[in-house]
Structures are given as structure tokens and as C-alpha cells.
Length: 66
Image (cartoon, rainbow, N blue to C red; front, side, top):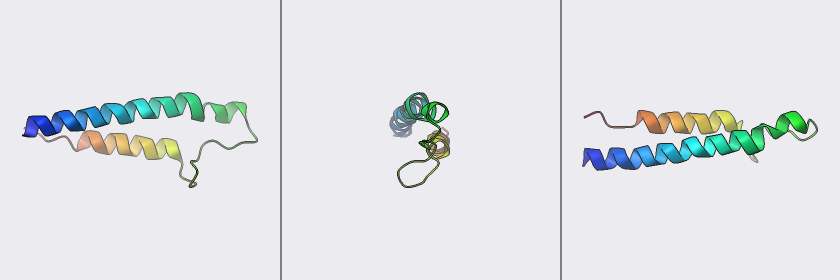
């Protein structure tokens, strides 16, 4: 059961890492090119890069030690 849970958590971690990579590539880098359009925060005002990194890291730390 622990192994199955860890596999599921690892897949979620991989998704969150890829999501973070896409956000950095397609959204965060636009901030440098479009100074009049602040893209370092999400629609709710959250600094999304910190937010996405936090969730990726918390997911990874939730792996069960066997």
C-alpha cells in the first residue's frame, strides 16, 4: 500500500514540476518582455512561481518513508 501511494504521489510531483516548468517558460519569462503587464502574480494576486514551487516541494516531502 505504501509503494502504491508513493507512486501516486510521485506522479503528482512530476505533474507539478512540469506545470512549474511550463509556467516559468510561458508566463514568467513574459514579465521581462512586457513591462506594462505584470505577469509575476496569478489572477488572485498570488506570486504564482513561489506558490507552484511550494506545492511541488510539499508534494515531494509527503512521500512515505518505508
